[in-house]
Image (cartoon, rainbow over all chains, first blue to last red; front, side):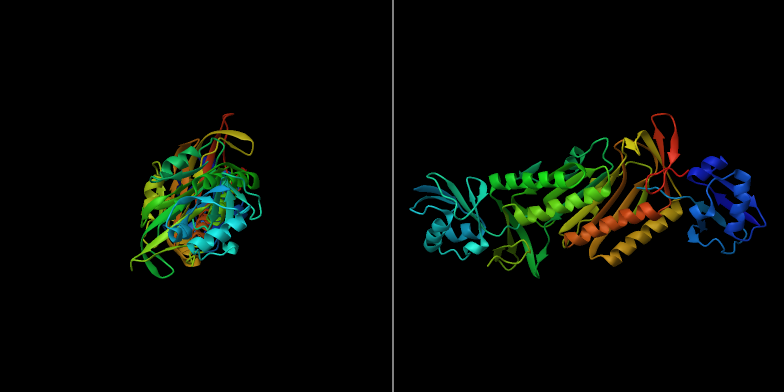
Length: 79
Length: 79
Length: 141
Length: 141
């Protein structure tokens, strides 16, 4: 399936890109992050991240659909 | 002795004046207020008031000196 | 710095005066004239102050706030005279490295100002009456 | 109303938008860019936001504040992009009939915004390094 993945903060720095289209067999965010972490060498583990799917917070095991926008949310630091 | 007395809020309304020079034998604020309450018909008792002498909070029994400025402070309501 | 003001308070300018390079947080409080109190319609307010003692007591409160909380600056301005609905009656501003101190100090100052500073609010009601108020906004008599 | 802004936040205008005839109290919080953090000299900041989710989560926090506290209005604005020392990074304002609710709601909103809204602060240090921060201002890695 094809996903749109956006990167922010330290994930963006490590990946070197703001966003990418990802062709993947992963059916949920957990599987997708495992793949992307291996590819980009992300330091942050899943326990440090939250997941958003199509602009809303979601669970790591929520089934992904083709075309979904997936964002891994590092620890926030606004304010 | 001669005192300068300033009035504020409901005391000012009742006395009908902002301030007055008072010739009195009272040696402290308690005695002075008793006189002035009788003269102006103030509704507020001493338990509802604080005293200031020459611009600083003071006790009801502090000895007054000739020329002192005495103010009886009604319950405040700034803010 | 505690100020009594016959003229409108300029909150934006006062806030800028709190700025310091090490300050990360600024908490402010504004007291506005409400159109009602204790169920009565209010048209306008008059504030009287015993100015010398109000300034002394106001400064004392700011000094207490500086001692109690880790803050960088604290200021307060209070209007006197006649005010209309919506007018800014009192302003408190605090700058600090961190927000908890800024909030705590701001609240301390407004609470103590309302409790201790010799300023009196006279409400003019829609029914033509007026009255002096206690700190809890109930009538004096 | 929760806003992300590429341009400087106008706190005075935002405060005026909170005004209502029944509002007697207004509490605001401003977060300013500090010149240091955790002992390191800071030159400037960059804020990134995941804008759609930041707005949704920001609005959710304001709605929670309206439910939890007796307030009349609540607004928040957060800068994104590059900021210099002293710049206004985040503004929260609350109007209410009484001050306790205004203070409590203001504090609730800034605490939750810092904890939950997907915005990230990148500090640029005097030594040439930069780093992404946690909500407690410690480095991410």
